[in-house]
Image: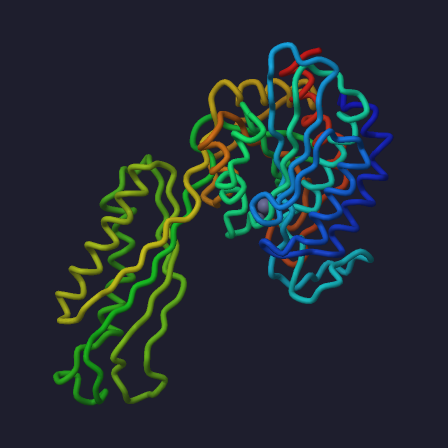
Length: 386
Ligand SMILES: [Zn+2]
Ligand SMILES: [Zn+2]
């Protein structure tokens, strides 16, 4: 596997950074220590410019090539945040913070992009500019969106962006990617059903919200089975069902439902919202109650650009000999916002046979580092050849 030799040399340093970050996980926008560590390292590597506080706690570094004849600018993005999970790995560098854990491998992503930044600062064997982007709050906080909203793309003149995620279950260092829609749009809803509470022995005098809500949960499943084009996926999951009564003998006045919707296209995203609202109104009317729907748009569909995806796959092939076509993923990815602003590509790199991401026994695989770092470096050197 022709990974760059320099990354074999740097691997122990990168592992040490990764484990330091792993031991000190920070959630959402609270990546203060991690961001400071990243900024300090980028300055030590000799980045021309290091800016903190983009998207609250995001960090942006600029590395200029030996030459700059075409004004090309490529953005490379890693995420830095951890998850609210209690770590159960038993590692000697396990989280020192109760209830916070790097269970998605963002410690590894940050360390690998730092490794690439060190190499690129040393060699500068490219014609153009690299902007390294370290974002907070990928796990539901929209940190990438906040960095975009702060004007990052225009401020640094970024023309293309690339991202990477480790993938448990894929062989270590092997790559997979797909053009077009890749990760799902992730929206959320709350439904408040209002009926008429009463004595459980006198249902005829009440409007029973538990029956109404039960019917509603089942009816929502007809969006995927009856409304959606079967080849355009949609997931509707009701994940919380709370009644206003805790008693055995009271028909509750209210039921509160929560859930999530995952889609792979703009049309399906709009259809799901429209159908949820219509089904809620219809079911509530059928049973004589009322439904209030709050609908929250989350991350959009993450769409890989055709040209950049083909290029990213070629680069991956040049490193590990092959690049597989990845299946679509119904999870969300905040990088979607960056890909809405600029063309680019997002790739998966194998983490080997480990626990899945978001599991308390998950750990980023340090053996992935040479391939991951090489991909970053080759993206730059092959896209902007010196
Ligand atoms: Zn995650
Ligand atoms: Zn992740």
